Image (cartoon, rainbow, N blue to C red):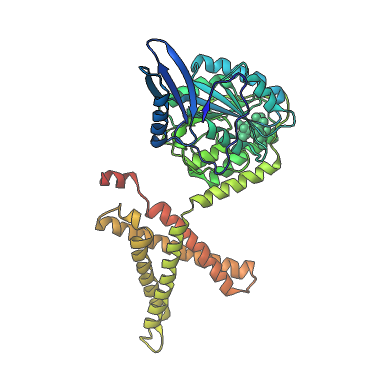
Length: 454
Ligand code: GDD
Ligand code: MN
């Protein structure tokens, strides 16, 4: 599949299927020389670049090289690909492209591209962008007909991108393009992701209504409550303006909902170093925001989906099964100690022993099965004893919580009815509590473990 550099770039084919970004930029530069002068140069586009395909291409092209000519194939990626998602931005797209070109021509001459991904805007934003490709060959335009939504538009753009560094900026001029050099410089200095932040010192929002500021802050706090380990990574997790290293999200199955592409990327990617650069979020020059209350629903659903994605379901099942075995052990010991037909000991004394034996049983199986991968990294008897004592404490707190919830449900919510339903709900909630606390405080790999293991 060969393509010569043309004047007016045609609309690019829109990728389909999973929202997965290739690790390797998929462009090779073929150069053949006779003597000094370069005689020909053209680009070859490979859908799935791998060594085999490149070798096959190399042999095909060697056959093309005239006798005595030399052939060199350089895997050529470009430094930076910036995606602009657009919907109804006819007035804004040209001034934005011009100011971006002015910034990037200075920073990365011939080493960047701008990719407009338009969702078939009624105002023909895509056509205006396409017309600009005559003047700016580094500009590429995709027009989607069968998909809608800001976040997926960005990923489709990244899928066709050739850059080692990927970026996204809004198409309405509200994001300040002058901070791009600083953001890219931080990537070059080793950061994996750099987000433009309105919440850093020196950052801000020009003229948002009190209501929009409140909802935006509220959304951020809500996100911190549900997904602290992701949303807490940056000071402006709702920012739609950021750059990142391609390899940090390559081959990750991205699956965003609605607007919040940064949260999806932070949740699915591998980012050792995340940085922010402050900026002032500007007023739109023309057109309207496309944000509706519907996007708030999308945001909540997106957060919950990421939370569930990260919820260790398989481990929770094991924890539940071990918990059930504990109930059986508890019952058996209670019977063996307190039943009139056996030792007929007092109920409370028997119950305490039964509960402790059940806790020991649960600890045993959780340490060797549910959390075996983690307990293996916390070696030695002393560490195991520590875990057992913590497990005991957590179960004890769980027991108290169980009694509290049971009484609240039975006496208040169900008004003295449904004692067994109340007990079941209490057991379910406390199982979650025990699991969550044990995952957070007990079976987790700390820096101390890592240090001891190395
Ligand atoms: N392709 C495509 N499809 N683009 C879209 C769509 C869509 O369905 N919806 C919006 N866009 C484009 C707009 O044309 C604009 O270029 C950009 O996405 C942002 O949309 P706005 O509607 O202007 O969003 P906003 O200004 O209210 O909010 C922006 O800034 C916030 C603060 O950074 C967004 O980027 C938010 O995600 C961000 O939180
Ligand atoms: Mn906007």
